[in-house]
Length: 358
Length: 252
Image 1 (cartoon, each protein chain N blue to C red):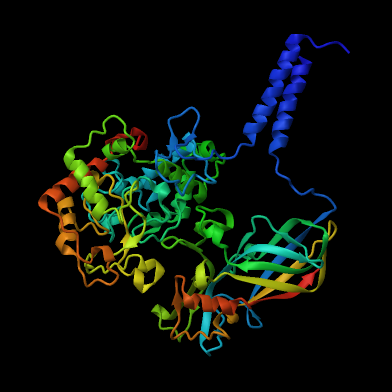
Image 2: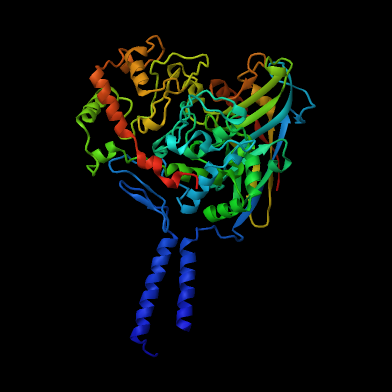
């Protein structure tokens, strides 16, 4: 048997190494997300990273590995009015980038034929940490969220089978679905997973407060803001827990029901103890998302603080015990608290072109 | 060059082989079984819209739509073993004949004595996001606003119903807690069924929709006529329909 020359042996070793290397990657599971971890998507600008000091997100793109193509498809769908019955309303119609993906200036939004809903459009950021969606928490998974506005008669009022037909007629969409999911045949599952890739990637964690917490440059909090942080931790953090600024619970904050008589969480659970409770919203990005509350009844942060000081309806069933006596602040404390709340605005998130309509 | 080609082929083979899931070997050691569902009202085959039926309360009604999920099918052997169908989700609807019959392949050959399944979709698939196939929300068996599958659905009309235009609509769902409508059913075969390469047995299962309305829990259409969310009433009706399946016969 002829001896193998050194160069050949060398090549053999490289090739053997390649076999092991390729075999390893071919079987690699979805990338694990760890603390401060990253889901890297090679050759592109999309990633999902858990901000330093944050808890593990609930949605980690399980069964839906994040890819550049999937993200871009989700973005195209998000801004496509063909998801509505008469092709006029897109997700982005009521979830605008400059409003942290809420609907600026709209207590409730207008959908198809200018029909009005009954609840304030919620902003979109940090969704992967949410165990439930909507003000009543009726939806239990980020991938199941978009069906609601699509099928709601006053929002997009479209049937899923019509969307499949419209998208399938479009060669660009067929190619995009094929690129993202390896299948040109468009399914609702792939539509919802693409949207989850787009929306789940929207992380807002770059406010002045975040930089302060991470001790990064730009973290020079003023004395007023620091005082506001202490006031926040004393009076607000019981529900609006850091770092997401919500504990994701459902609570009654003493808003007198309007003629709509929205029962809130009880609409889902049918339990009297959930009557008129709503999901605690995050306090991040408030600058971009007025008006406030589940029905958008309060226009400014001053009005919100007025409500907590003197507007709470103490006759409400299930009023949160923390609010029985209201939240009374001195004028200086109010000024400082609002100064602090303004450190939660994340301009980099608002400006992030990856999330804008290309 | 030849060495390099062989090695390259080696890479491809190793790569391909290293990812292959362990498929059961398709051989004489496996067989197929077909399930055939027939929907009845009492002893009469269900006829949509035009036939009148009477529930246990004495209310007259017609049926315009009827369907249910069958999931997590297991075949039980005479020696305590079992075979669980992978990805076992089937939607049976009266209006779609093709939905009433389906086959399960690659079942290890053996003697089977019973079938076990869930009426409805298990909790896991109600809580893990977008699904496809039988579980696609396009099938109108899914609540969007309060996430969850409609496990079983019966719609029609009854003169006793106080609903709009005498409508009756029972959309039964709820996958967790005491109000869950999920019910496990075990049907023992009249005699053991041999599954092997040469045999293609067909198991005919009958559903009797009159069971929905009791006994034990009698449904009075003047009081209960439209249910479109989880709750205790749904759970009680599920207790009723848990007994609606029987094996009518088996073609060996």
